[in-house]
Amino acid sequence: MSNWLKLEGDVCAVTGALGGMGVEICREFARNGANVVLLDLDEEKVKAAAADLAAEFGIHAEGYKMNATDEAEVQAAVDATIRDFGRIDVLVNTAGILRFAAMEDLPLSDWNEVINVNLTGYFITSQRFGREMIKAGQGRLVHISTVASHSPETFSGVYSSTKAGVNMMSKMLAAEWGPYGVRSNCVEPCFVKTPMSANFYADPEVEKSRSRLIATRRIGEVSDIANAVMFLASKRSDFTTGDAIKVDGGFSNMMGDLTAKPGGRRAYADNYLKNKGVELWSDESGVAKPTACPMM
Image (cartoon, rainbow, N blue to C red; front, side, top):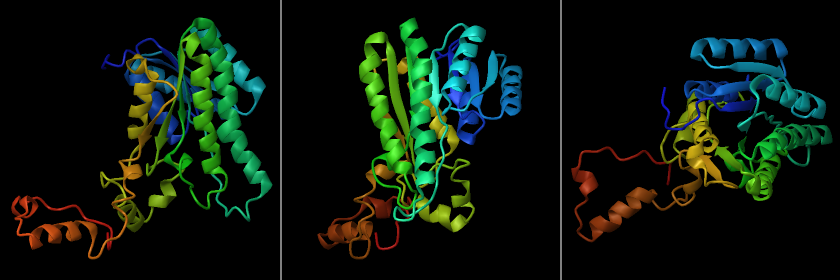
């Protein structure tokens, strides 16, 4: 167990704790010696998950049934946390849903449902747990957003809009609650294998083609998200607030690389130098050159 993050003994609550992302984040908190509050819809399963986590890592863990869109249930979870742990240090919002549709076909019911879970739920949990942080004079909020909050995730209904709203909500909380010692930040994943995106990668060709769009040439894992969450939830990021960490393998920087040039971008540059009589180190090194997208 590492103590670099200084999370030992902290009380860390995670919404969507039974989801693939939430499970990994809870486990990473426990590995770092934090006490964990698991929050999800299924009371039996969330209590069992908490018991398993406590037994495996020797920390205090409790599971509470909570629908993040229900004010009464959220307040009950806050009250139970204060009763059982005495305080709350960290809240991580991971609960989220996705509904696919073209905007002209998107049912209003889907629009409202996704906004309610992805944005309103984040607000309610942040407000209610945040009030306890304000009273304590310290606390850290981490919200799972997405790179698609900056550019549209087309044909995914209102998903991008809700996550853009999460980003601004986080900035609002950071600005207003900073004087109370409470920080708020986002993690913005993209091209990460989660239960929500698992079916995207069932076809190996899809994973291969997507990997070519990413600087690191691999699809991310939930552990990549959890690592970023740990940093923002820890005291090591004490002077970071109202900000976001992209966890996308460098995809956000790839627009220029994905813009076609004759023969491909790397070949175009190589031929330019060769025509000037320059011997390329990359040809002599014996190191394989990265595979580019066709015509890139």
